[in-house]
Image (cartoon, rainbow, N blue to C red):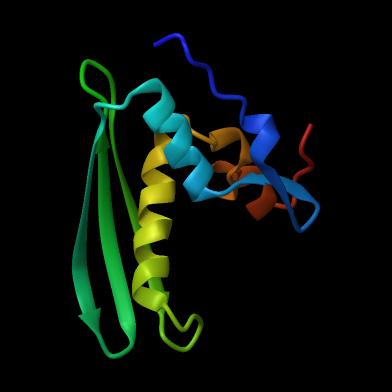
Length: 115
């Protein structure tokens, strides 16, 4: 596809770091691969907890799965939030926003500086 996506136009400051929201990662995917398949499944729901699995498939390309959970105590729309987390992680695993996603920044967990 000849259309390109400039992720830098959609970055948000999140705690002093660049972050690409899931809606923009999804737009990026659809810009490059409108035929991509997205599947989400609510795998657990009860006691104020929602757990989702998202699978993104790019025909002739990669496949990634992401998981997301949320609780009613932490977020009013916890079911939607859990699904969005799962989708965002699957998209990041395919490279959509990975550079702006803390889920893959293991240096932050160990107090290492980013360079």
